[in-house]
Length: 265
Image 1 (cartoon, one colour):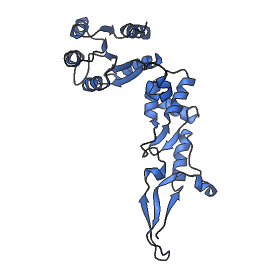
Image 2: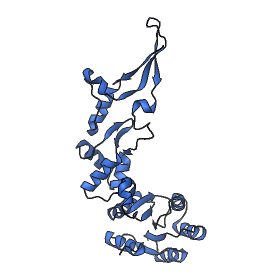
Image 3: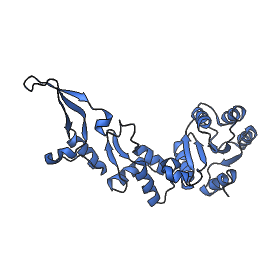
Image 4: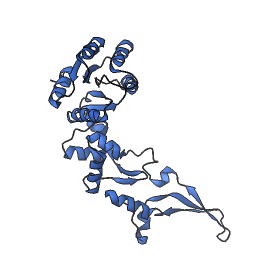
């Protein structure tokens, strides 16, 4: 019978080099510990039962053989970009956490990956609000789900700042940056509240309010956050917005407005 063997540790040096940059566990390079190395992306297959006639060819490994988090659909990991979004920080800050060993990670094919439970523990230890999707099933069922907020702002730094305030309030937050994505996300995810800038690409803020109020049975609270003219803010309220908040704003005013709209007082 033709036999096959799996090549272990072929990528050890490469992964060790990448992982060391972030402080992630890497593949051991000691030949005596090759059996502990991650599986390679290929396996070596004997094409003949006769060793004298055999030829070794490369064959892709199945996900079940590899244990590769990027290819194993049962494995759930979070990228560094997602960590930055959850924590409301820059990618450089996340990289610094990894390099200093403050946040655990593993080395994936495209860079460091973090387990959701490790991120949740990190956020808890650093007094950051943990999003509902990072909570374990047991945690999620022990209490009511937090209100879901959709943040819509064309200016991404502003959207991130608003999102950070809401996450620190313990709310479940989504973010989009144009009118079309806002409409689709509103319809699919049905937020409890949507914050909305009136200056948007694709579909203007007032047009979006009119469309959602006219076509959707789900009536989320809408908080307009904009530096538009007072006449446009009034027009937004007439179209169906529940409240308006002028830019620039302070975080206390934002938190107070959201608590009132969601009856969290």
